[in-house]
Length: 226
Image (cartoon, rainbow, N blue to C red; front, side, top):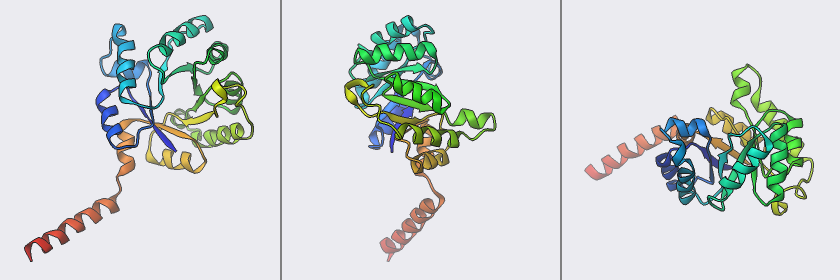
């Protein structure tokens, strides 16, 4: 499993990259607004993220019609070679995805919740498909079960004839809220988990690790004082 950081915060991205664990970044207007982002600096900010990250950087279109999404996608793709255009799973998004993919622009279909949506996104040429886990949990439904269904369904078929350069579709476990979400997504075979920085930090932590470190330090003090 690969990890994409779900953020627009450059400091978080730099720190995660220093761990050697960062394969990409996903961002959206909400995350950009949380760091005080300004509209006229948005493209420059995406470029700064791309300078830090070697892997895919998903930047989201905020348009609602296919022509506008395509226009946004073309502009975003010009920022850097590793930009992936993030498009919502809807009729206009599918049409835009097909056009962008045909032009060699990689697309991450986001806000995906069902197997039929995922299959339609795959047929439209999506390079990445992002089923949301946490938002199902928010309405007391099983987001992990829905993710598992999407992973199984997409892996049943070969969609490489639809994607840019015949690349394999990757399933991104999105809207991740906990380390357990990551564990379950990995066990069911999701290719990528896109996680907030606070979840990425918690994934490293465990009480037994802390206890082991504490014991090690105590024992080392004994050695030094012997």
